[in-house]
Image (cartoon, rainbow, N blue to C red; front, side):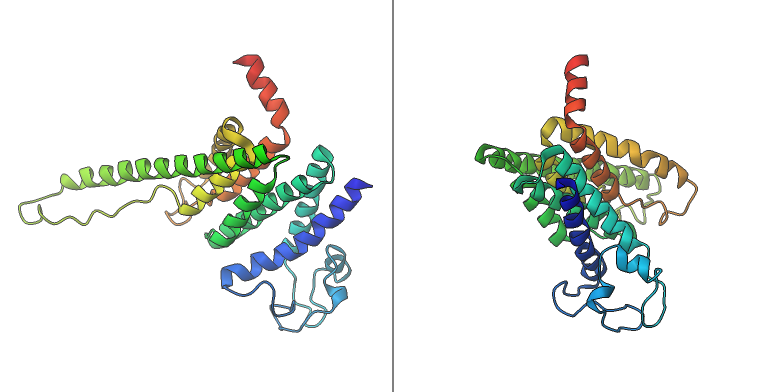
Length: 271
């Protein structure tokens, strides 16, 4: 019964998450203006907005203009439902579990937006951190989540500075070999950003959700998940080689969060 309630809650929030994913990159309000078909702009009826079922009954087409409705809509609703079910199965139906699920829903939205638009909206990032910090069972847990969020944000900021400095210095040193007496005082070396600010904020949410030890494991796992994709893109253009990293961070965080006890037992038994 609890898992059924969790699934229904998940797909309901997933339906709204689709609105967030569609409108925030365009700078549109997620509250005002009724849901409408992006192709013909006709306002949708309430029965057109039933999560999962409407897409199935309409056979993935608009009720008015018959244009195709992206499969992203039912997939996001299903994933949201599964997130709620998995966390409800782990913790039961309670307020901390709800906040944790909402944090993962924000990470899901960030992943889709990063994948489609190569952008990471600060508003969703802040919500992910906010919900992650609130997902505690005590005041001490709340404070610990906040400390871990700040620790990971600071650590990623330092890492970003160090990597950016190294990459920029490498380009500068390579450029010195081409200097002549005519251009030796003219420097056009660009500053190379090794990591986006959005990744730093995602790291803060990871720290709040997982803590230090599990957070580091999630970062390592995210790199392993991204490695095959990056290898497949080695021969592509520089633009195509820009792999959105937030989806891998989010997926690794969820995997480690779900299997936290098993991972910790393995670490304690082997190290």
